[in-house]
Image (cartoon, rainbow, N blue to C red; front, side, top):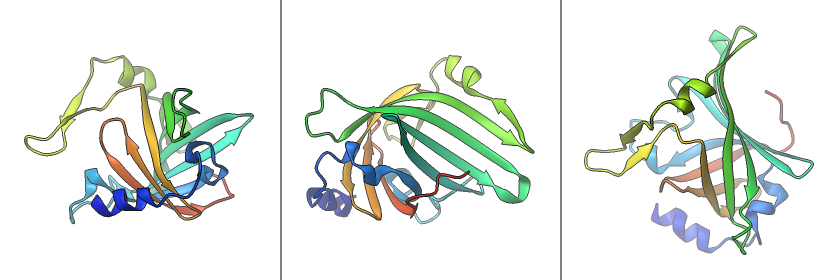
Length: 173
């Protein structure tokens, strides 16, 4: 964590939340949530985990996906994002979840209504650790560092993430 925070001090991209370098497909390379040697952040529940960021007509879309290719399954969470107008440095993205669905064999099952309408569900990352709400519809991330290959972000729940770019152009699923 300290190394990533030191890297953030070296960020040379002005207003990283507005920069076109955000666009592309990213693989989660490390997170403070999966910082022990038994968890692989790019492999969630046995599936391959990616994040696609696109911009169309000024709207930023963030799609987190866990894919199980051999099973023809994909768990998708989509959110719209906007640069926080109160943030003068252009580092904070405000997120609002639009959909949460399971794709199986070409059919989609919407999960958003059920998950987000339930009372808040929370977990602790470690015994005695901070509680985290799982079914929160809105949130924010701060882009601490961005270059052509690496992105470091800090979520409003305190989790730190490092993503590695996989594909800067293709936005296929």
